[in-house]
Image 1 (cartoon, rainbow, N blue to C red):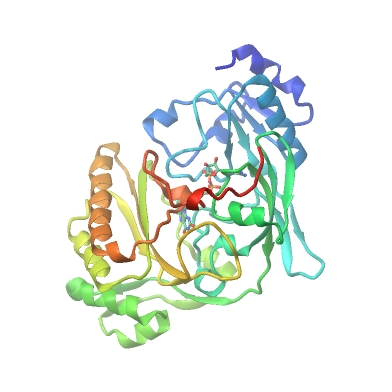
Image 2 (cartoon, rainbow, N blue to C red; image 1 turned 180 degrees about the horizontal axis):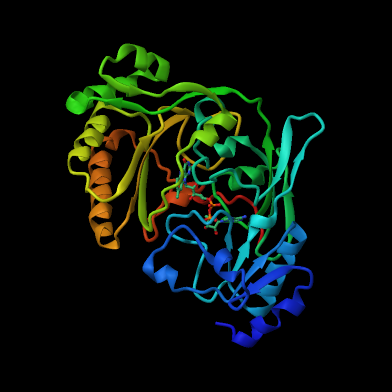
Length: 372
Ligand SMILES: Cc1cc2nc3c(=O)[nH]c(=O)nc-3n(C[C@H](O)[C@H](O)[C@H](O)COP(=O)(O)OP(=O)(O)OC[C@H]3O[C@@H](n4cnc5c(N)ncnc54)[C@H](O)[C@@H]3O)c2cc1C
């Protein structure tokens, strides 16, 4: 690990770039991340660099490489496993790269890595427009990254290397900006529905089979509360409940080809044994269509279902029970859906220590040609 004196020279080595050390007044605020795991909470990165452009990111990476300093990259800081903070490593905080340029033809826009939505975690790769427009990676038609050597590299739509970057998060470099497709605003059917739980299995099955929310509401009689309405995207984001960021959390996910009856049964059965403390968000996506014209390295097939269970407990003593509950639920789901499991994983949501193979373009050693 580099000595403390290496960091004392940091400010003068990177003129014009904001660099915070442990004694800087804004350090605690910048250091804060969502995950409050006990071990992580004790880690105080030696420095947090806050670049505003690709050139500034490049200077920070060059400085780290020439001084033998490891670094991590953080944006929204929502990672369930706190992967943005590592003992002894400098943090490159990309939240101040906030530009937005809409192209003259208004078909694409270039957005800085730090251009965050109201809650970036909630509208990540999977989001409210997934059935109409596809995943977040389907919208990405260009990327600017800084490689591990400190080079600023741009990948356009025709560049095959973009395929390898779509779906791998930041594993190939520091993402500085994305060029994304622009779509017209449209309305969504969205809101809370409360059903009588006496025949919950049937309700869930009907919901799953209906495919369209309006059709489900019209056909299923057990409704107790219906606050579903047609909302524009801005109205939808504004209506989201405030984020309940209770301290201790965890997450499990699995991709399946279809939400079969056997899988639905597992999900419904798991509700009976759900522990009492956690706020659990149990969800599956419905069939997410994949645009066959967009190449990326997530092996999910032409359409898929993304089953996820996340939890936040208010008391750390309840974390183990909640973790065992999600673990058992997923074990049962994997057994029930064994024939239709996809060889893929959400790179950002694979727990530490679990095998992420299949997530990121590891088909028969095909590299993506990115150097560095
Ligand atoms: C409550 C909650 C709800 C969620 N809901 C959804 C959902 O609906 N759909 C969905 O798809 N996902 C969802 N997620 C997962 C979320 O999309 C991922 O955790 C995502 O990585 C969060 O982005 P972030 O910028 O906050 O990540 P950070 O915690 O800042 O970073 C995550 C990872 O990306 C790396 N990284 C960050 N910025 C860069 C960069 N500029 N260049 C290179 N690497 C970088 C970090 O090093 C780290 O490994 C949810 C997560 C939470 C906590």
